[in-house]
Length: 272
Image: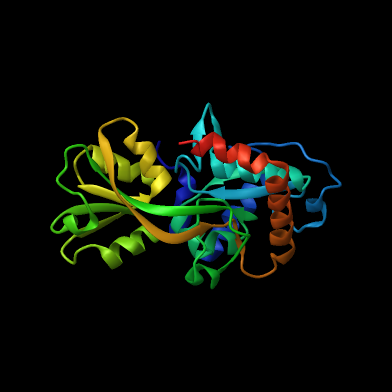
């Protein structure tokens, strides 16, 4: 799946992105999911991009966290944030945006969306520009190679090409730990990375474990190493003025954990 034109947000100035956000808010075609909520929910008093709707930005595809199926966006992040919105008494609208601008805080600061839900690791560097919800997922990094490859660990990447996603913790981990003569190639998204290893343009992919597990299912690729990096994902909001929104999201997430709905969604995507 190729990226939509909205990916161009990464190249806009902040002012241009803000103008785009105003246009997006006025339209009805947001290619998003919808959930019916009560107008008396916790979200009814929040300052939102669109009244009554939680507008969520995500870098799609990144299965199993976010992907398109049957003309709708789905995945662990999407299903979870949809139920969170419902608990808050809000509908939900999903927008496909570039990850680098999202994780840097540009997209949210411009007012294009209320939240970012995109398998985003909570880091001290990102906290400088973003506010985060409570953690909702613990993650590992991993190394994927073609079946039959002589690469068995990150140390074997000497003189090899390894694909990473731009702006991710996987990219940071690779640049910090791969041999100095490994060629680290950053791609805009997992879709481009996976196409590159399929075409033999890179020798390995280093990224989040669940995503590489999905790629290994076809039998042509194999996971050779996992890396415990103590990463946790959080939903992101703009740095200033989002305190009430983040609090409401945390309350809804806690409710979903208590009533078993979080576990149901988790089991749907991570039963293996």
